[in-house]
Amino acid sequence: MTMPLLTLKNLKILQQKRLILDIPSLTIATQGCVVLNGRNGSGKTTLLKVIAGLFAPQQAQVVWGTTDKPQTWQKARSHLITQTVYLHQQPYLFDMSVTENIAYGLRQLSLPRQTVLTKVKQALAWAELEHLANRHARQLSGGEKQRVALTRARVLSPRLLLLDEPTASMDKTAKEQTYSLIRRLVAENVSVILTSHELENHVPFNDSSLWSLEAGQLSIHAHSPLSTCVRG
Image (cartoon, rainbow, N blue to C red; front, side):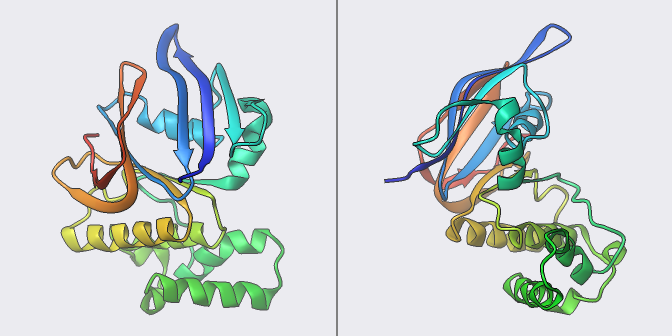
C-alpha cells in the first residue's frame, strides 16, 4: 500500500481578488510520480511553488505522512523548504564548472571536503556525466543543464522533487535521458511532481497519476502505468 508523503488541505490563493487556486485536499504519495496538466495561467507553477515553500497562500494546512498533526503553511514552510527541491524549466546553474555546481549545496552543509568530493564523484557516475565534470555551465546544452540540475538536487536527498516542464525545448534524445534520471529518482524513493506542455509524449513511470488544474480546481485521476505528458 502506498503511503502518503505530504497532504495539503484547504489551499486557497487569491490575486487581485481573483481566486487562483481553491483545492480542498491533495496528497502526494511516497515514491509516487504525478503529471500535472493545465493550460497556461492555470496555476501549475504557483501550486509547485506553494508545495516547495516558495509562495505563500492565503490559506493552507500541511500534514507530513500519516501521523503529523496539520500545521499552517507558515509553520510548515521551513520543513517544506528542506524536504523539497523545485526546478524551473530553465534550470539555474552557477557560473562555474559542473563539478562545482553539484558540490555547491553540499558545501553549504559544512561537510568535510573529502566527503563532498566523494559524493560528487558518485553523483557524476550515477548521472553518467563524468565527461562533463570539468566543463563550465555556460558550455552546456539545455538537456545537459537539466541533468546537472537534477543531479545537484539528488545529492541533497530531497523527499519531493518538483519539476516545472523539465523537458521544454529538448530534442528526443535529451528528453529520454532526462526522463531516465527522473524514473531512477522515483525508484530511489523520491516523490516527483512534473508539468509539461508536450501532450504527444507518453512517459512510463511506476505508480504515476495525472492531476488536472482548471479554473483553480484540481482533479486527481486514478493511478496509471503511463504518465501522459501534459498540455502547458
